[in-house]
Image (cartoon, rainbow, N blue to C red; front, side, top):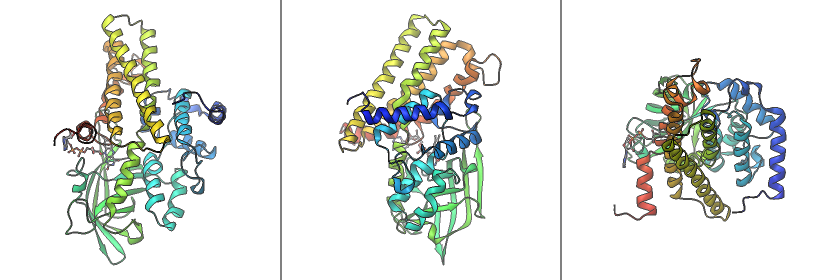
Length: 391
Ligand SMILES: Cc1cc2nc3c(=O)[nH]c(=O)nc-3n(C[C@H](O)[C@H](O)[C@H](O)COP(=O)(O)OP(=O)(O)OC[C@H]3O[C@@H](n4cnc5c(N)ncnc54)[C@H](O)[C@@H]3O)c2cc1C
């Protein structure tokens, strides 16, 4: 891969930098560059992030890779990478509606009816309608095909009964893309359907789940005979698994902060310098961390090169996910070691370095080993598909 920008890419970068230079929101000063940019975790500042999202949308910087016919910018993969890099470098906050933009909309572009596309895509882009993903259940996480929430056709409505769990942002969402069993006699991947569900439908109860960090970013969602109009079906009845696979493919791609972890690791290096961390063991751990960040970036870029050449990344994505998770945890641990006992102080405490960022990160880092497929599942994929280990 040629690391230098082409003239067109350099122009794109310059245009973006100039725009960021004049449009970065004031609240950035109140929420200094922190976890938000990488994790797209707007729990603490949702309204401010939505306002920023809308400003980016007005500037034509949302839906970067969406086709122009759907209101996107039609940008290339490399432009998308430049965009992510520049936003982090500028300390920009994240936008909102990650699931809508990155998963629901692409699935609608593939499987949706013309009416669904016309009605749904624009409000997703503008963050006028926020979406969540209702896939996981208490007995269907890694084993997603075990979904047991039912959506049975009754005249012109589906009647939905069951429970979802881990539903990120359900409490803020207007709509949910739901995977449910529409053919009551079916098992596993067959007989499922995907529905676009209005979260205000009577019969839906949302209960927040409190996380290690104290935030309640995700929820349990209960469906008790909720009646969902039949036109909310995406794709073919009982063939919802096809839609789910499309969504999961985009979910994996949207874990894209991975390519820029080195920029966050650089901040740990700066922290070490500021704190005068000279302990030789700590220096060694810092070096390991920097190497992990650089290796992750280069591996990522190697896969980008392959994508550009028309060979989509398959099971190798699991290598990236696994090494990213590991490096992220390492990053939080090294930062905590640099700060010593102060690393335990939570935001709001006057003595907490970086307003408690590292106390938060040490707990927050564990999510990556679960979300989007657990570490163990990634290892299974690597073993089966890449290493050819015996089953
Ligand atoms: C931050 C976060 C946000 C999320 N947001 C959403 C969301 O918005 N919508 C949604 O639908 N879901 C969401 N999820 C759920 C996520 O997809 C699941 O947590 C994940 O798929 C794991 O499923 P599970 O929690 O049921 O664990 P389980 O599948 O029950 O696994 C439990 C343990 O057993 C191990 N295990 C399971 N099967 C195997 C196997 N075959 N071989 C080896 N080990 C195995 C797992 O690795 C894990 O350690 C979110 C999760 C997190 C952490």
